[in-house]
Each structure stands twice: as structure tokens, then as C-alpha cells.
Length: 120
Image 1 (cartoon, one colour):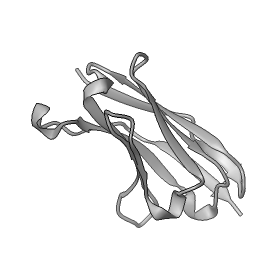
Image 2: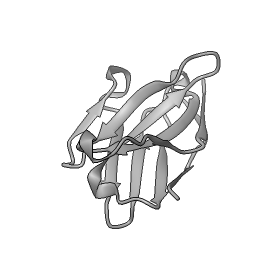
Image 3: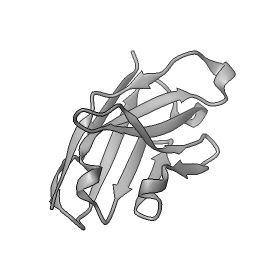
């Protein structure tokens, strides 16, 4: 069965860096769009970044220039490098997998999340 497992979360001070990693099993990444989302306490889940099957990347405005998403199809992993972290980045970060192109399937897989805490 498909499983996504996030790792790399932790606690850092403002301006610090973390690198999150999502390891996927049970499905091939090369035919999927991979994304990172986050959910802060009391708020709805927010899209942060995605990388298409062709390698194209997109980011929410608040993290542009600070975060970078990457994928390794051979290893079935997707990473999120987070630099210049701010307290407002504090959230549980989730890895997401969906088909690319969309007609390949109707699934939408999620990991359990990893906590990122940025102290001021």
C-alpha cells in the first residue's frame, strides 16, 4: 500500500534552517506531483510548495526565496529545504502525492506530518 513518511522536523530559532524529507513507498514518484502543505495551530491546512512530474516548481508567496522543493524519482523521495525560517513558519508539515497528469488516477495521498517550530 502507498505510504508517505515525513522526517526532518524540529525546533530552530528565527533565521535557522531545516530540511524536510518525504519517503514514499508503494507508488512511483515520476508520474506524480509532489507537494508540501502545513497546518498551524487553529488554522486550516495551507499549500506551501509543489513539484510537477516534469520538475517544475511552485511556491506560496510567503516562502518564495526561502524554501526549495526537490525530488529524486529513483529514491522515491521529495525534500523541502527551508532557510531563513520565521516564527510564522511554525506548523505541522505534510507531504502530499497526487497523479500527474490527473487522468492517471483519482488518489490523493498524505503523510502523517512532521512538526516544525521556529522560536523568536
